[in-house]
Length: 307
Ligand code: FES
Image (cartoon, rainbow, N blue to C red; front, side, top):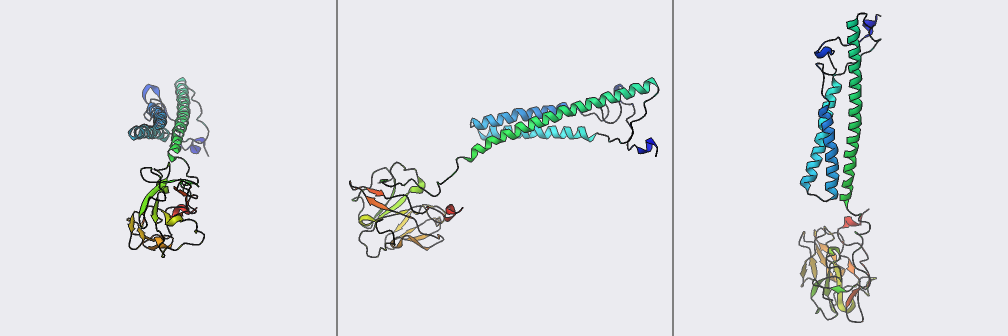
């Protein structure tokens, strides 16, 4: 097989502007400028740093979105131009063409080699720029981990109630043994935690109602006829806000789950699948109602208790 036959493409023949060869090469017909790709990568660099700084300084979402869009646009622009640059390549296999004997042919071959070196040098520069800009962009996105917030740890299983926590009303007034008459109720919180939504309770004074069933293990939880249940619905977490005095039930307004206060707040209607957790109560020496401990089971929807 001849040398020519083994070549899939011949080396480019001298042609084009300034004696540059045809096909791909600086200033030749297939020449693609590298400055748009360089500009795109520089834009990506600057925008990535801007994104990270904006996120850390808690800037508006417009700034964050603008920097992110600019960074992605820069990479897209660079890749588009780089792709065009590579697309002009010619694959040559087989022995290199025999050098021309005449001076003009040798000069043309020398030019072709110089241009090839320039192309390789541009690609190295673009590759380094792409890796650097891409790395800075990826690192800039690491700051987003900060948006995940603190880990929940055990917070879904515990509330702000502790042994000795005094019960207080919405406005922080301590609840005493004389606060409620039999058959009435109020909403209470642990003292110092009025904003703790998962700690809110419905406090009722059952009194000496003979229909009230004390569950096993809870004999000391209802001093002087006071009983307290979590106000967070076990279905989907709405406040169980309605009290029906005649039936002695609490009703959740979201999906009408109904809890029997005479029997451990067991659900008797609606979608809730488990009772409202009961808070163990005590009365201290000053007559203030206090908690014996936190709830003994998690409050709220059942899925909080999974995993
Ligand atoms: S959240 Fe209470 S019934 Fe659905």
